Image (tube, rainbow, N blue to C red; front, side):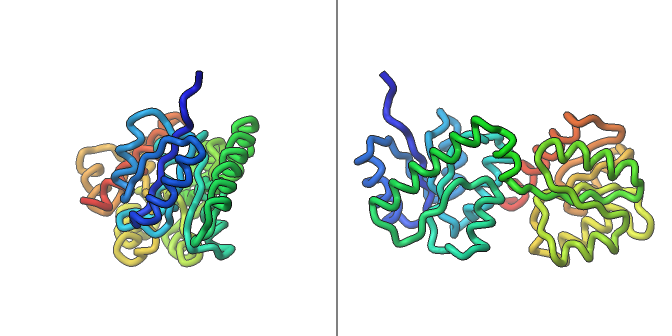
Length: 267
């Protein structure tokens, strides 16, 4: 006989967590409560839950960052995620969907609306599981590829698109700076040997002058000396992929960059 369904509730307000806990237990769920992103990641060391309920406004990482990390760095593509939050504008909903959220319940809520939202999130994720391509299309991950060689930009783009990324390409520092005024990407892949400013200078300027761009930055370059690795780290880069590369090494580098960027937030 199957055991009870399990849920993880992530919210920094205990009254909200307790309320959701009560409603879910009436439906036969076992519930784990988390007040921070750190608590949530620790809770994932056991069996994966049947559903995750995420607040957006959190003290360490917000719900969008948590969901993005869950989907793209940890690889939990099958767990339903329900956002439970007071932010319900169109932009909030689009952002929740872009990072892999399945459904949205507005605060304040009653028991009926919450449970309906949970079941809807589970149904939506189950449908995506049957059609994996739809789940990939739904998570609108965005990558900026910066390289002065068209062949390298095109090669990197083809590999990233295979993992569900929408890709924008730049061949100079000026282009990437203009793009970052209007776009907040999921990841930046940056060559080192560039005309004008090199990759280290570009990365340092992004970190110092563009605080809204808190995504991982991966250096993709043929430079591989110890000094180069130190410069990459000092400028604010998160990982280093050496040319020539294959799709596996590139995507492993992107995943490692996600992990290192999160660690850098708490350094």
